[in-house]
Image (cartoon, helix red, strand yellow):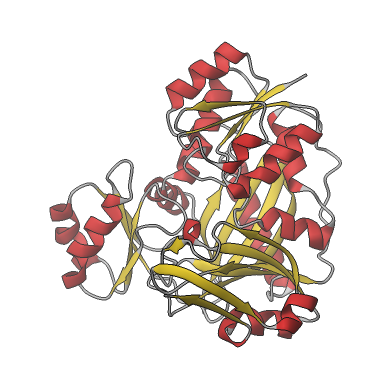
Length: 399
């Protein structure tokens, strides 16, 4: 029986644990949260932070594992690659995964290799950032270089907002480093989605549409992603080419990716982020519903060095997405009211982290969702309208 370490055991990571068990693996979960629900499904659990590379490596050597996976998690992706590389297990290059995982390194890589990229620079020092601010054209984003889930992001229009934004971003950075980058204007949806490469070739991808709620305290965290993308097939082919060029330059091998991409008003393609891992918020499950392709199973197989050559691109059939049930304020969750027709016709599955009576927080970051709905729709029009105008079919009551 092959042994595999899965980094993290949150509710959203349970599908990966179950997939590994289904494939006959002995599953070991690691994180610093012993109460995470995924630990109940694994064979062993160790209380080690998923970002503690050396401790995870020592454990992996001790247990003589056959593979390691960071599923739906950016912070632990470099840990998985580091451990795998040190133990000569299947992985993409650790250095390449580090580039994808650090926003400032990624922006520098894109610029040096001729990709479209916003003007950007990383900083440890606020004083240095202030001195450089005149070289940027506001509005600009201020972000932690190494965080996830839309934590610590601000959009500022002048230097007077820099100090607060800098301190906010730095608080969410493990390296205490931030990045300032110019905003890319788009006239449609930001591109979401997942993909998978086999021996360095992007053989599968499914693009969708990110949806944001401007009423949120953090308007930069997606509240939904819907599939398929509204992009034309010609634009999708160009996006595919840019991703493939990136994968080739980084010498990536076999594994999953999560995409955040913007097609600017002038038609230029900007790769905002490519996470070297499966998407969160049950995006792989949405994609399986639409295409029949189980990217989670392929992720496990890739980590174990098993053959993934049969994976092929499949066109989405139908309209599907996830919706993050969220609150605008902190308080006690009183009720979640959903239109009866939506309950009957649109909701496929639901995953709730909190129940009525629990204290909830405003939706500042993706892990503050009350729950996730996987939803199907009868048409592109219905899908986009429901994702963009949520208060017509759902109300979250907080007191």
